[in-house]
Image 1 (tube, one colour):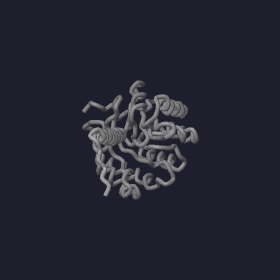
Image 2 (cartoon, one colour; image 1 turned 90 degrees about the vertical axis):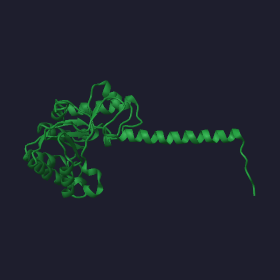
Image 3 (cartoon, one colour; image 1 turned 30 degrees about the vertical axis):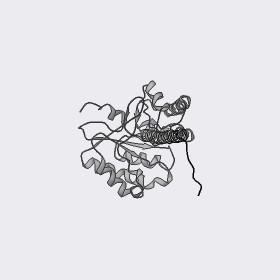
Image 4 (cartoon, helix red, strand yellow; image 1 turned 90 degrees about the horizontal axis):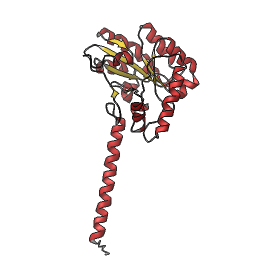
Length: 249
């Protein structure tokens, strides 16, 4: 049997390497948790829900605009006479400017969901600026004139994007209710509506993904969700209207 004997110096070196590896792994895990946090970022503030005693809720729709989703969602909202906030992707808006104009013409708010919809993690400041500013320009091209809030794709952000938004006095918006994040709920319109109604609180921000062809169940859930929340005494507001209630009890 061959036996290996390490010198004291070699053992110390191996221990030091092991400690560095552990620290890197722990640090990476912590950064990933921070990047995915709905309530914390390194620069500036972000809003996942507004503290208020009023029974108000903001409906928000991510992605697109896409032909499969825009008109059905607009029809549902119009039939119930409410306005919502659409977080649009710049590249989709460039492909379908008419759909962006339809959203703006219906009186809804439009937010910035970046141009490429890539995760805004290990990116440069210049890339962050380009993603936001290109999309801002396309949003203004729809005729929308209100404040443009920002929602990072998948809610993920780390250094460059929060810093850019903080430096430009821009608001980062996440959410506190997202039924589409649970596969067992996402496959059923009834389950989506049930989950949303059960988890909404005064000041909640609800995130739906209704845009693309495969999101029919989500589109079907929007109307019943509105009806059931309204029966519970909730009123529906846009993001700017909800933010205006921040700190007012």
